[in-house]
Length: 551
View 1 (cartoon, rainbow, N blue to C red):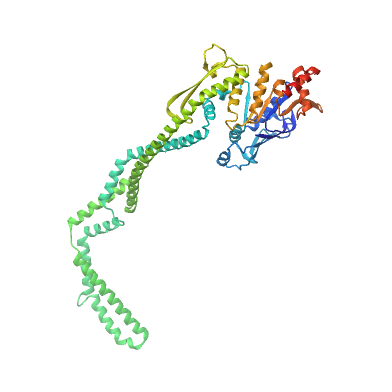
View 2 (view 1 turned 90 degrees about the vertical axis):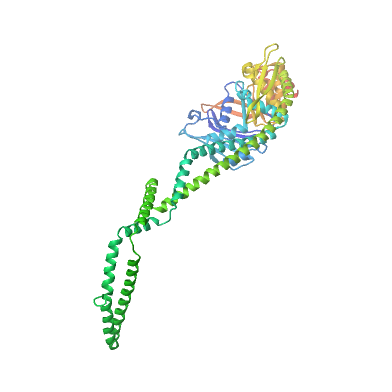
């Protein structure tokens, strides 16, 4: 519910502060007084694009602020999803700067126009004579039936499961594409993996293979040099070890003459022992060495295999080949994992669609049961509004695929004239008929659906007499279940007001300004009398005004 509206520096409005209450609020005023400007300010709050020309004083910024009581509208999820602070008394603000820029706020948090518009659409519903497009929208027409059938909660549950089904289908499609991509590569990857498995690679193997290869290729030369070395170390007469042994004995004779001499003897003995160990190892290696052409051939083949794998995979080490092997193993596991995930999603979707099918049948049943009641109530309202010759028919047909509202497709057939063929409502109503039809729809929904503030912008144009009185009565009834604000020129409608504002123009300091003020009971009578008789208010008009209010 709109509780407060303040406007400053907008068009020909200097400063304005209005308080709104429950029930029916009527706004009247002469043509050109600024009623449309007031509506324009509200539309900016709802996210309509701004124009620098709308500034009253181009050197000052324009501020429009509206406060809403939203506790009954179930909007907490909107605030949560947009990371906004929820408050049951929510304030929307729009600022137009002299620079031409525009800023929007919800509860003092800056927001985009799209977010402001999304919230605004759920707070205020504005209708003019030619602005009733959503009457023709199938989703809105189905909502009428669902509200009348008392199954709006059931629709929400269906829509929640429908979203889950769609999300699961999107995931399934994505995973199938991923699997298809993997499938195109999987045969080759399996071949590469088997090739690496067969190679049975070992870390640091390449270096060992190269070392063994060099040794086998140079066995004779290695044996010759090692034999010569061992012989020079261990020759009985001329070998190095024999000379070292002799030197150790000589040094031993003088080692007792001082610590330094003793150290010489010990170090010489250490060198002899080390060389003797080295000789033993050289001898052992020489004895082990033998030419092995078959082993060399195997080594060469192994090296060729590893080198080819390195070249194929464009890496430089066996370690990198083993990493590739691990990646290929993971790819293979991912392939199997994807297949399992796809199977799980297919089962989930099947379960969800069985549930959706059952719910959609139940929803269709409720809608079909509501159709006669909706048709009856709307025709009764239209009769009161002077369209007593109207006929209508709501028809449901079943679609193959699920949609946001079930599996129903609705056709709203209507004729405003007796004997005329019923046609889809979008093609069968004029502007005036359309506004009264929308009023009938809103009347049908009021009390059955939590509706936002409804603003009617002269939708009663062209209506007079008894019908005008019925329009007022209908608005009064509707206002028992929702906040209704109506801009009107009809005294019969204005007389039903719980709250009455008058818009007027005045000239101050040579500048034309729009003023809006709430009328007292006495002022309301005078205003209605003026609507009846014009600016020359007669006593008869005053009596008629009192009679309209009392009736």
